[in-house]
Every structure is written in C-alpha cells, then in structure tokens.
Length: 398
Image (cartoon, rainbow, N blue to C red; front, side):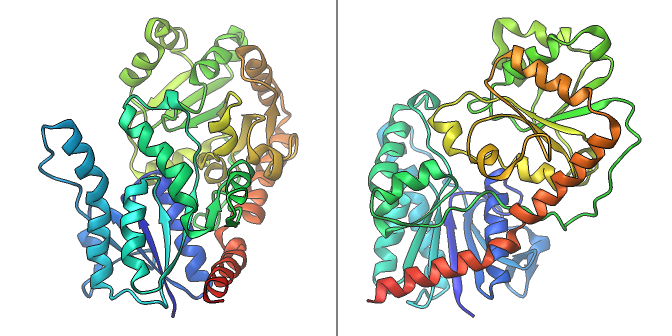
C-alpha cells in the first residue's frame, strides 16, 4: 500500500477547519487504496493509541510538540519558529523510513518548513505536492515579518514541486501561470457520518454562523442585517453563533458593540460546545448566513462551514463571491445567494429565507443535503486525487 505523508503545522485531529480539510483529504486517499499518515503539530491523544500508532478514523497520525523555550529576542524567535517545525517533521520522517515510493503532500504556508522538508526528501527521490487554500492580504497581518514570510512562501516556495492542489480557480490560475500541474479541489465533507432528517418542529427560523473568521466574513453586515428586520420579523428568527465569546464580539465591534444589546432577543451565543452538542445544534438549523466582501482573500477562499452545514440540510444564505457560489451552489434550489455585502441586501436575503413556504424550505433543505452528497463528499474526489498523484509521479520519472 502506497504511503502519502501529509506534512502540516496544524494539530490533527480536532484542530478546527484546517484539521477537517486534512481529515477528508486523508479519507479520500484511503478510499483510493493509499495509506495516508499525517504529521502535524500538537497533542497525540492517548485514546487513539493502538499498538504504538495513533489512529483516528482509520488515519495514522504523529503530532510533534509545539516549540518550547521561546527566545526573548525577536529575530531569534522568528528564526526558531520558522525552522523548528521542519526539523520536527524530518524527525518523524526518519522514524517512518522515508523512501522514493512515498508521496508527500504539504498543508502549510510556511516556506521555511516546506524548504527544510523538501531538501531532506530530495535525498530519497520522494515526490510532493502542495495544498493551497488561501490568498491573504497585507491588512490581515499585524506582524510585518509574518507577512514577509507569507509573501516569500506564496511567491517563491509553493510552486517548487510544480504540483499544486488549489482550493479555487483564483489560486489555480496563479499557479498554472507558474508552470504547475494543478488539481482544483474544493473543501470536502462526509454527509454520511450522521443520518439526515428534516426537522419540522422549529417555531422560528434558525440561522447559524460558525467560527470567528472576521477577517474574511463581514460580521458587522450580518448583525446589521438583523437590525433592519422589523420587530415582527425578529420575533420569527434566532441567530446562533458558535465558537466565539461575547467579549470577542465586543472587541470586534468596538464602539458599535451596543448592536449586541439591540439584538438580545435574536442572538444566541454558544462560546463552546462539545462536538455532539454542536452536531445536535446543526441538525436543528435552517440557514447558514455568510456576508462577504469581494477581494482576493474571499475569491480565493472556500469556507468549510458551507459543505459542513449542508450535510445537515442547512441552506446557505450567502454573498455571491468565490467558487462555492459559482460552481457548486444554485440559488433558489439549494441556497439563497445575494449580490453585494451591505445590510440592505443582507436583510432582503433574510426576508427571502423567512418568507419561504414550509414545503419549499423542506425541499431546499433536502436539496442542500443532496448537493453535499454529489459535490462535496470526499469519496467522489478520490479518483481525481489518485490520477493527479500518479501523473505527478510519472512525469517526475521521465
């Protein structure tokens, strides 16, 4: 069985959206007869230990510890943090006895980590590919050194293998222009992990927003959209927020934090939920609400919460931006897509959702689930992934 070593700086498993991306990538590889092994940063869970190997959902993983003894000197701290992870990944690769028969897939934007591992892998003739899921802007970095590192990685390192797995056409075009072979791969999901049944017991329309991606999503627009509803309309809705604390919302809103008080009857904040509690909540939701500006980050990105919630029959109510609204979702069939990112267009989208007759809402929820099965299930991407890896192998041996 051919091994695929997924090298990352993400904590796997249970490490958020990035960890979920890696999980479904690994499951797609298992589906194709490969043996994926994830080398990540974080904790190895004792309950996953099986005969000396950590295994989660059939996926082997080895997490190296986060960097300790951080230097008080800024430059040394920067150097240590950039080269430490690559060295740790190599230590795991040595234990696994890396060979030319293995294949490496990187999921990191740290060019120093990539370079360190590539140099080691080249001794064994091990081929590799890069996953690329973001195109950040300067405004998203508070630290100038981290922004410099990102630009160096994006512009000069990621294309080194000439084999890239981009999450969007925006990113695909960039790396095709650099001469890379590409596989356009969206965020994947597993709609069959839990049973699906439309919940018709709701007395109100339940909207949800998961996470705290305030640099990508216009959360202010979303809240102000609810503010523009009439009192009568607000009585018909609830807006659930998960994975974020009220104080974080207040910091984000700054002088406009009084919005939270004005929406007290609508907002339900869930700072932390056990996974089974989160699943139960998602099963009860009607709509996922995301408002986004159009910029290079949002065009390049693919929010994992879209396919994740569609697995439970939750209907996306989203701004038209990015591949998910252009290639995968269909307005009025499995989603409600609106133009722009202002409270005025947001509230009209909310009204479209609130006013849907129950039979149409049930039909759209059923179709949202079907779209998750037909377009985002990891199993349907296995063959494309296998062909891509084998083509990269063959081309490298010519």
